[in-house]
Length: 204
Image (cartoon, rainbow, N blue to C red; front, side, top):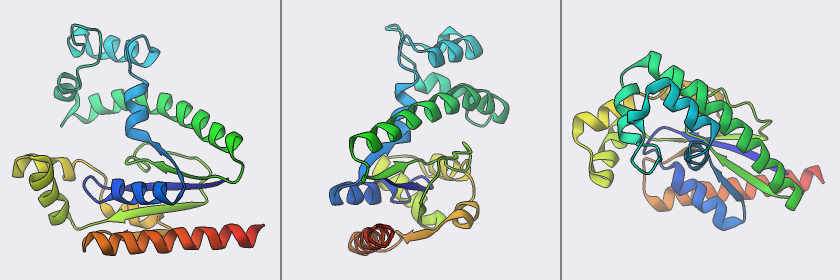
């Protein structure tokens, strides 16, 4: 198995790169989806969130009200740290299981673990390659405004709340520049896939 850690700031083109690698045949595991799964009704993590933040973070049907939870943690580093201490270990345990299953299903699989908070969550899987998607702050903000409908100040706050791009670039084995055209991003991703296959052939 060949394990890729894919990370990047919000609106930096990470999903586009992940989708392209999936089209090439990679197994895609999305940490954001796992973070939703681990706090579904009946899970220990959801119970811990309610105990920490109160029952008002639940909807009437017992599911997590993300907007309400966001009010507790956004701009509050202490509350965010408490939330992360609940969610991150649960996501780590689930991702371990899914990666192991992918390898069991196909020992030669290329697995892309798409994890926005690779640095913040101290994700420590034994990655063969860490890929970082990179776009300037202004581009991230523009995309959040134009594509996701955020107000300018909301978009800036979202970008600034994440770890600085410099920290991501410092751990990158490969940087994919997503500030240009979609075709440019795709061609870099295709070249990455070719490199991965070359590496795997040399190992065999």
